[in-house]
Length: 147
Image (cartoon, rainbow, N blue to C red; front, side, top):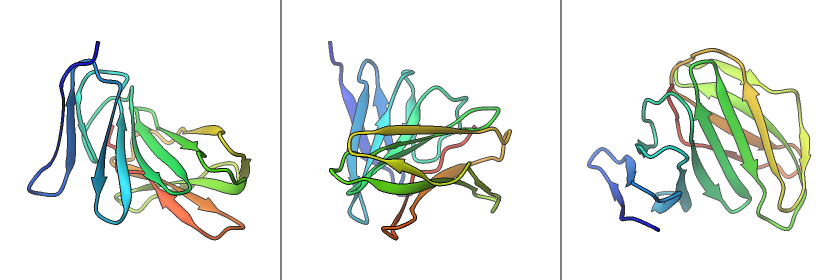
């Protein structure tokens, strides 16, 4: 059973969604990308909302979906390649305070694949995940998420 899902843009420009039983929400945001909020817990969520982990906040780009889930001990990164292309990509975590953390290096992401990485950094405050395509030359990023 699906229940009412409310999506809106607040005056400050933050996307928010309130869901009771809905598993995902999607809304257009400026810049030609889509903000997708994937819920595994039933909370009010947004682009930068304090939380203790348990769900991802995501942006959909034309080369795939990039997500972050902040926990008290680090940050989960996830990339879903929904294109028909294979890319050599690399996760990086960037906190709002300027701390930059790399993963274990580039990896191949084929069509339809999902890749995850846990940045065991502890609490760096609000942060987002960047995904760099090493050969194709593009980069995408997730919304901010806060532990």
